[in-house]
Amino acid sequence: MPKQFEYPEIFSFAPFFTIQPVLATREKQMGLWRELILSYHTSLKIKTLRVHDCPLWKNKEIGRELNSEAINTIMEDFVESGHGEWEDQTKTRCRILWRKPEQLASDIYDWADTNGFINSVCTVYELHSGEDINGMSFEGADEELLRRALLILEKQGKCTMFKGETSEEDGIKFF
Amino acid sequence: MAHRRGRAGIGALKKKGETSKFTKKAEEIKTTSLKSAMETVKQLEIKLTKFAKAHHKTIAKDPAFRHKFLSMCAPLGVDPLTTKKSFWSFLQMGDFYHELAVKVAEVCFAYRSRNGGIMSIKEVQSVLLRRGTKFRLNEVVTNYSADDIVVAIGKLKQLGSGFRTVKVGGTQMILSVPTELDNDHVQVIQLAQNAGGGITLNSVSDMIGWEDDRVKRAMDLLLSEGMAWIDRYEGLEYYWFPSVWKDSFVM
Image 1: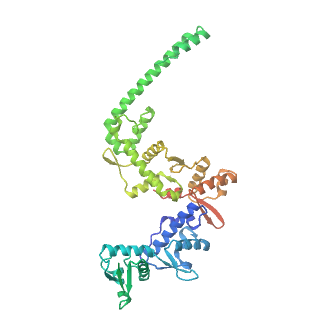
Image 2: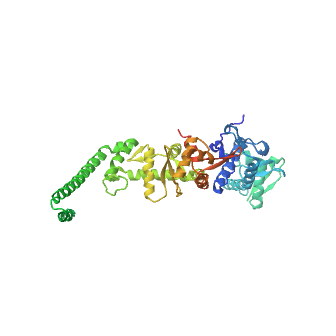
């Protein structure tokens, strides 16, 4: 049973659904939309935003909805912020990156360092579901996202990946 | 004390011989009245300080009582908050209002980007309540009222910080930006308050009878300061005020 999402107050504020002409106000508004999109998808554990039927674009209770231009503006801003990326050329589906891969990468490395995993090996499985990672930002993370984070670490020379018997047993050695 | 009595007396003597007697008497009475008035004030001050000593606990605990006490002090020119006389410092009111002022300012700053720098006192109170912020006065954790917040803002004003209160209808708002809000602006915000939602430029002209230019000028400033947001709905443009909208939530 998916848990109910608690909409922020701003969602009931009619002007929230009109892109504000005053720059400072618009920046505030965009920030609030980014927060809303991120927290909605994260708390309901929805990995992909489908632009054409996302329930966030309208609030029936106050009779307001975003027009298509406004939706575009908000999506462009969201993707640019690094919390989303398009899955397709036509920009109809957006994968939600609840933590940017760069953030996850540094979280993972810090954890490895703190827990003595430097110069030692752990599996991808352990990273998202192991015993030592309770409360870590990457706990329960999407494997795809984890691998992207690990790729970043690899590029930085902070780890190396090698294949295991199953993808879950793929290993990571931290440096 | 220098008397003007002599000069006036001489002047009167010069003008009308007989009435000089009365002028002299009038001056006498004036001086005596002033003397006795000053004596009365001194007596009142003494009474007030006795009162403060006897009731300092209640002053600390009870916001309504505190408010009454301060309103007794004001006409006597006594300010228990800022006077350096060591006597009044036992009340520790200066510290209390200073702390309150700082917290109020923090809340205003935190919400500024959302409401443009205008926020109702009620809303500030509800934020502080939600955060569980407590204040101590005379070692006692005390409640604080809207009146206390007004006094605290007054203190901030003294420090030249640009904080001030403005009354919109029956609601006290705190302005934390240097923006000059004139009567036109306040009236527009009040209209929004009465309307309980967004208002159009036309509805403003209809209700107050200003020409379009005047309405637009007022609204443009409020919009550019972020105190108003635009809502485009079914071909019309409505202006909403986050501070008014939020205030309507607070019980």
